[in-house]
Length: 114
Image 1 (tube, rainbow, N blue to C red):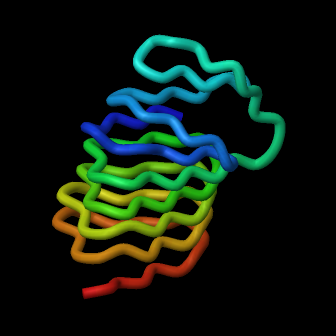
Image 2 (tube, one colour):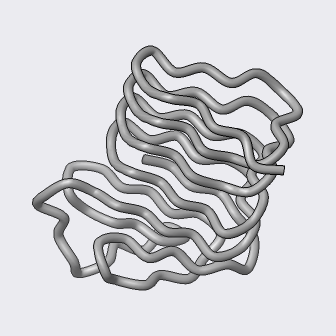
C-alpha cells in the first residue's frame, strides 16, 4: 500500500502516523522512509484525516476524511470525500462524494454522496 499526502494523519489498525508518504509492505509500515516498530498481522484498515494525493492498496478498507486525487485497491471497501481523479477497487464497495474521473468496482456497490 502506498499513500501520498500533505500534512495529514493516518490511522492504520489503531496506530496513528503523520507524514507525507506512507508505505505498507510485508506487514511493515514505513513513514517518510523510516520503518516503524509496529507489525501488521491481520486485515488492514486505513483511516486518513486530511487530503490525499493518491492511495494504491493491495487489500484493506480505506476511509479518507478529505479529498482524494486518485484511489485504487485490489480488494476492500472505500469511503471518501470528493475525488479529483479515478476510483477503482477489484472487490469492494465504493462510497464517495463527487468523482471527476471514472469509478469502477469488479464486485461491489457504488454510492455517491453530494
